[in-house]
Length: 235
Image 1 (cartoon, rainbow, N blue to C red):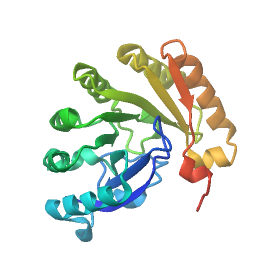
Image 2: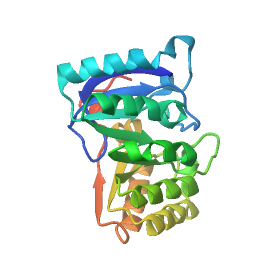
Image 3: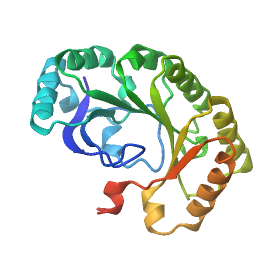
Image 4: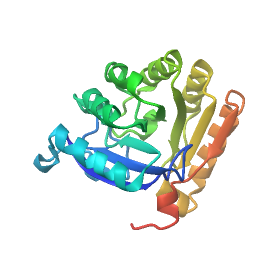
């Protein structure tokens, strides 16, 4: 497995903010969002390769010590790990703990392999305008949401909203169409941290526009900044 770090902390993003969580940050990502705040996790280095059994032992040690509510599979992009399902199975065989998957929702086939093993899925919807490689993964994200519904898995949509430029109406319509088709119960709008701290007006405009579009189709919308980046911030 390719792992950057394993650590205990408190969930600082999304719906379960504040929950005691054991984070497993995997190395490697298939997208290239310009606002990425974990760029060090994009590249896979030789030292990142760790034996699965070794990681399982370390995770169990953390669980015994800190008694977290969740294990967060994050990255990078966790679904790039070929043996992710086997890893999660081994953890669940040893203890009862909720598995919280953070995913960019672009890898449908890989998601099918783990959907039965997770408890919560944070579907991090990537706005095409914000990917430096201009990838559009909205169709894949829709399929992943549909799989969550089919398997009756808890999920929520999270969108990082940026202020690098004003989103086009065509982009806003794509987001709106996605919400109409997927009908999520919960939407988290997360202001991109650097722009948020600088009080970027474009970010506020984009946030307002998405909120106005979304409120017609989503029952519960929350605007939640990254707690760990706003309580303290190291640039």
